[in-house]
Structures are given as C-alpha cells and as structure tokens.
Amino acid sequence: MLVLQHGFLSGSAYWQKQIDFFSRNFDVIAPTLPGFADHPCEGTAEGESRTIHTVSGYVHYLIALLDQVNVLHFHLLGHSMGGMIAQEAALEFGHRIDKLVLYGTGPDGALPGRFEPIAASRQRVIREGPRSTLARTVASWFVSGDRDPSYPHCIELAAAASVPAILGGYDAMATWSSAERLHRIGNPTLVIWGTRDRSYHRNQADQLVHGIAGAELAVIENCGHNVHLEKPDRFNQHVFTFLGRD
Image 1 (cartoon, rainbow, N blue to C red):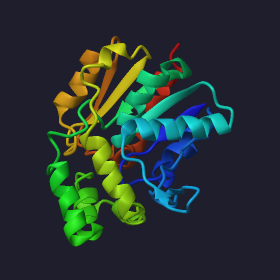
Image 2 (image 1 turned 135 degrees about the horizontal axis):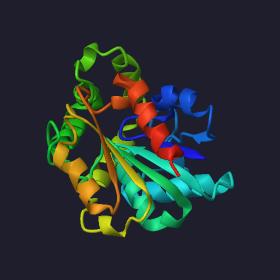
Image 3 (image 1 turned 90 degrees about the vertical axis):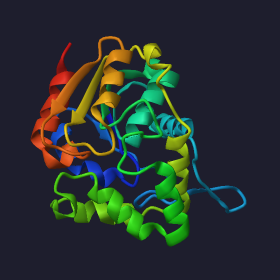
Image 4 (image 1 turned 45 degrees about the vertical axis):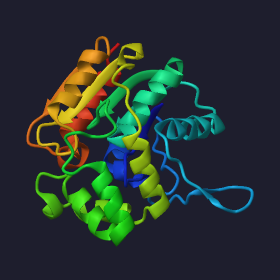
C-alpha cells in the first residue's frame, strides 16, 4: 500500500500522474485533507466547521482515515506540508510505516527559505482574500511560474480551498518543527529535492538526510517545488526504485 499525502493548497488530484504510474504495482490511497480541494471541512455535532490547525492534527486525521479502510501498514510519501505530516506520522506511528518518502519538504515548518514569510502570506489572505496570494504562491512552485502547463490545474485546486483551511494550514506549518526529533525516525527514508525549489532550500533537505539515520537524497536538476509535475518520469522512477529495494 502506498499513501500519497498532498501538501498545502492541494488535493488528491495533484497526484494523478503518480496514481496512474504506481497503481500498476501498488494499491494507492491519495487522501485530501479537510477544507482543501473538493473536501469540505468536517462538521461538529453542532454543525460548525472544524478546521485543523496542527500538523499532528493532520496526522491523526490521516491515521483515522486509514483505520477506516483497515490499512495497518503502508509506504508514505508526503510533499511539502504533506512531508511535515509524513515526518510527524513517522514520529507518532512509525511502526505502521514501511518506507518513507519526504519530498520538497524540510524539518522547519516556518520555511525560512520561502519566497516570503508565512506570516506575510497569512496576513495578506486576511486583508485581501486568498486569490492574489494563491496565484503568487502556486506560481512560485514551478521553474516557469504561471506558464507551466500544470499551473492552471494547480491554481484550480488551490482556489477550492476554504479560507479557514488556508489559515489553519499556515498555523500548522508555522508552529511545527521536527529538527530536534529527526533522530527518532527509524524508517528507511528517501528525500527528494528540486534544485530550484523556492519553498525549501537545499539546507532543509540536507537536515533531513543528516538527521534521519540512513536517509538517501535524490536531487533533481532544474525543477522547482513540484518535481512530480515538472519531471514526473524521473520522480516516479526514483520513488519506484526506492520502494522496490529490499
């Protein structure tokens, strides 16, 4: 079983090229987090929306979902904020994870190398609404910006996110770090990083590799934050080789 966990402003459709490829050899689950894409925020008994504001909260949502379909053991691939979720899942539920792929992510949720501070993006969403912030954010994920063929689909997914989910995602990232806990991750781990990633600089990938015993690094040249869309064949092959290795 392979679980593909999307990141901030994304959804399960983000992984379609990977679902098509990996479904030949694995059962694949690609959950959408509450409030993102086509998944509404969960409601409480009183009918009020419940937004997740912590990375651990996302982990427990994911594990509960897998419990519902009786998935006890799985490979976990997480992208960006989904990579934070994957790290936290390995720390809290590592006995259930076979292999771990941390892609376009790092141990510092505040994203010190991001194109702008998380707090600035958050304030802009509150002040101006999400549209301009989302367009700028999604464009930063590609080497060719909004000219990338995948940009329209990605901006469509981003625009479907609810404002509470967006703000909850910012809160979750800004208050999370695994930097002092990486040594506790014992799962075989592959780290994937694109050389032109504007969200996570190389030092973030290096911290993961140096902090997790035995972790491997795959560096893919001339890609931004969305390697799986810019160079899907290379991305898929790196992951497939890693997962298939004894």
